[in-house]
Length: 356
Image 1 (cartoon, rainbow, N blue to C red):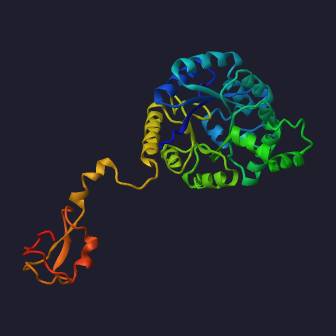
Image 2: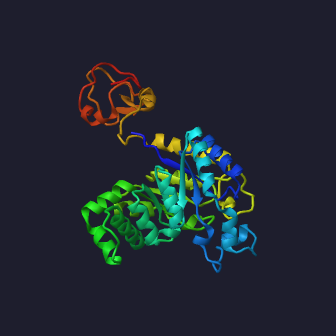
Image 3: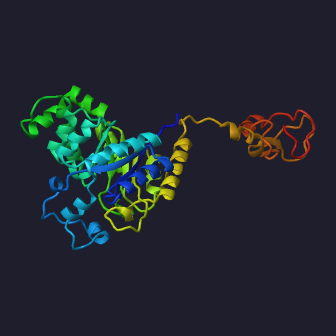
C-alpha cells in the first residue's frame, strides 16, 4: 500500500518580515503540492539576548554588523499576521503550521487550535517549552538536530511527563520516571513524530547521516522523518526511500535574497520538482509483495527461455546433455526441466531449435 509522506514547505523567516511575501510563500507552497506550509513564531527579545551571536551561515547571508537580536526583530512575524496566513492556507487547501520559540508564542499557537506544532532542534533541550507543549495536548513534530540519542530520550521523557498531566516536575528524575511508565510512553506515541536533521545551512552531504533515521525509529518506535538543509533535494527523495514519513524543506521566492535561510532553500519550481520526485518514489516503493506486475507479464514469453533441441534428433533417440539447450521464446517447457529430460527418448523427430 502506497504511503503518503507529509511534505512541509518551511517558509520560516523567508518572508523577510513582509506579510505580502508570507502570503506569496503560502501560495507557492500550495502550488508546489506541499501538504503543509510552516512559519516561525517568536518574540525576538524572548528568544535571544543582546549578546547572542549569529551562526556562521547567518553572518554570511546577512549584515555582519547586525546582531542576532536585531536580525530576529526584523524577521519577527506579528501575531496579527497569523490569522491572515491561516485563512490563506485554508483557502489554498494547505495546512498552516508554525514553530514557537518561546513560551508566550507557544501559548499563542495553542490558542489557534492548529492540527500540530513543530519544535525546532534548538529547543530539543528546552524542557520548560517541551513540557508546556505537551501539557497543552499538542500534536508535535520534534527536530533532533545537534542531539545525541540520549538527549532525544531526555526530551521524550519531558514530553511523557507533560502528556501524562503529572503536575509540576520535580526535576530530571520525574522525566525519567515518566519515560519508564507505559501509559505515558503510549501518550508520546500518539502525539509525537521525530525528524532527523543536521543543523547547518547548507548541510554538507558527508554530515547528512540518513542511516540515523533507522536508529531513531528503532530506539523509540515513533514515526521518523527528515528535515533537509542540504543543497538540492535528492537527499529528501532518498530519505523517503529509506522510510521517512515527513520531509521538511525550506522554501523561498528567491535564493539570492539577503537573509539567513534563503540560500539553503528551494525556489518554487525546484520545490515542485521535489514533491513530484517524492510522490514517484512513494509509488515505486509499492506494497513489498514480490509478484509479476501486469506491465511485465506480457514480456514473459519474450524474455524467458524454453528447452529446445540443440541438434537434429530422431524420434526415440535418447537425449544426452549436449542434445538440448535453453533459448527464447519462453513458450515451451521451462529450463528447470533440463535435467529431467536427460536420458529420456525424443518424443518425435526434432530439428535444431524445435521445442522439446
